[in-house]
Length: 390
Image (cartoon, rainbow, N blue to C red; front, side):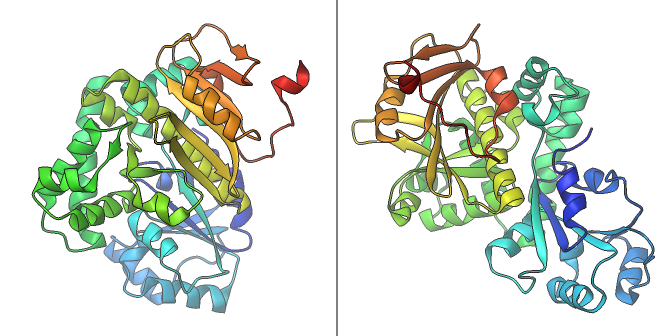
């Protein structure tokens, strides 16, 4: 199945190193091989390929050299920088990985100005709409998840079997590759606790009591799980960025199927799927355009809450309330709409026959399939207001 980033990656390979990050088994190697370019594939886990890499003896006539698991090479960034500076492009250099590339991206690097980053997510409704009917795609995501193997098989038993080895591989291979952590059982328990609390704010101190560790340790473990693309944080919006980081966040899973098969409330499963679709669009916007994209939620002292606020270059773009089934417009959505007049206010409903409008508060209610098939923030939205059109 063609991935959305393929065309942009091919373009970027012509001028800089491309780093392709993302969750384990999200399809990074498959995407790399299906770009339609003659390639040389080298995996650092292979003893034969390690020798080729050490001697730099790959075929220079190919269009792209795919370097898989390169982060396991000692001083890999310096090696890659030297290769780029001395040989340049072509051939293009495509480096794939997950946690190490994410940590490298966040920590500052010696490859500044020499690379483009692309982050690959599990399938979303918008990405597969050309090949899978959107209603079917959403149903698959809500039952078996969006990772390519279970999504394409569309079999709940097969998905459960795949999922047992997937998380185990992340924690016992990728985690140990990232840093020395002995408390694997405790981190597995943390993952289970987070699955029970999807769509709710998470308290470090509460988790610390449940796990019998310090709040600082819990925070560190959550950062590791984020770097491993197991979870992602959605923080409360506040004009003071530092305050929003300190306040309690929500955590969602890249694998919506894991939430569903853990027996989570269907509303939480649906909210997780919407969060995944929005997070993917945040990363696409940053990776494709270089603009800053943030996904937050809104809550005030009166407990009024809206699930998601999309900020592009710190400007509010959309307010989104995710509902499994609800014929009435959310009152908090109408309230926060008055505080963010430049943003669209949308109530996305899983079970809804047709779109609806509330012109008095400038709100729209959309079927989830319609919204998730089209959601994108790559371009500026058209200027439109229900009030202005009255």
